[in-house]
Length: 261
Figure (cartoon, rainbow, N blue to C red):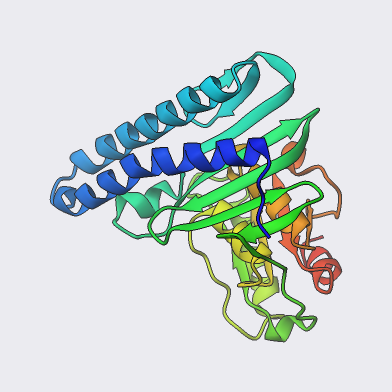
């Protein structure tokens, strides 16, 4: 089975078109590594090029929908439907020639995420989900893991940024988790792919502070439709207000919340 709704088809088509530019630009990164100034400017241009394609194509398909995107901010139209876009999630990886980044698109209806896509163009992995219809990777059904003992789990994390107000707090959380898990914590630098990997059962849980909505919007529905949980650190759905996010399977979700409280 695969997702074939009109909105999902639009999102897949848009992602694949934008990915052509992203793959081509990624191929140029190696040539820019010798320059101290060039790569940063180049990545900024790539971000904007990919975002421009995404917005233009989404507006063609759904001209009345609103848009929230990392680079340009908000385009306000229809208040009930809104695209949430991150053209390159994992920009630092992209900049350094590390093939682990993604295009992320979520679709809200009345402020609830109803569709999501996270596309890894280098591995050609398309993670998709739609409310009530499940989560898929390249048209194969995904489920979160069933591990129940944290000692057997692989946990992902993000942050902290060097200028984060919660830097020391994040280090404390990292230490608390490290004392509970048997496998060292992973940090890969792309929040949307971290959540997609939770949905696919590749990792068992993910926590992070200070993520923006465009980093996580698509991931929220990927995890939930794969049978997992997405909350803030208190177990509530207030991740946008307090900038904390936790995702995992049902068997370790409560234990993760207790560690982070």
